[in-house]
Image 1 (cartoon, rainbow, N blue to C red):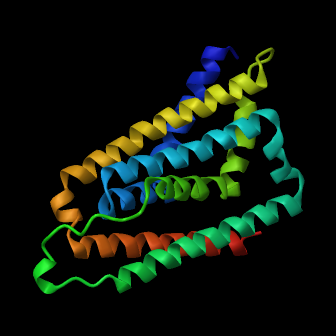
Image 2 (cartoon, one colour):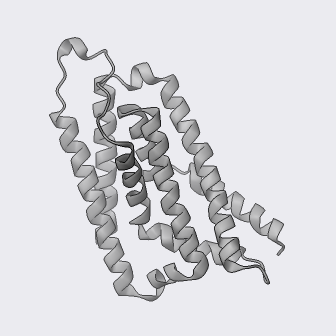
Length: 212
């Protein structure tokens, strides 16, 4: 397998992984609706930072600990589950506390006070504390490293491809949300989005905690 064949083969797999509905897309969509396009972009950058770090770790063999050490995997799994549960619970709590006057129901919500660095950190944490991402990279990247190629450079290149695809996909989500902003940014829609995302996070965190 040549380097070109490896890049094309991984790209085909990464496209399917990227467009598959999941927590990353939900986080970006939620930021675009309940906060701002800028927050959504930064959230996506945080997610991509986590993916790139996982790819680099897989390339140098660090994330192999997740498959070789049950203790390391369990510790990361529980930390990730706790983070997901906390984040999901926070979204649900805020959505039920958010009260708008009846006259404001058809207006856009007040701009979020969340700092951009916080949005980036949430995206990073969601991805970096998910051991399934590490397992995916350690399982897939070695299969697309041709003989004689540098594992580190090839791993970084493959992770970079995945990130570029994610940037395009997140851009599509943010653009679609922007076009429908009048409907999606109505207070009821924002609360519904926060609640759905919160439930998804709680479900994902619970599944992560109890799954062996």
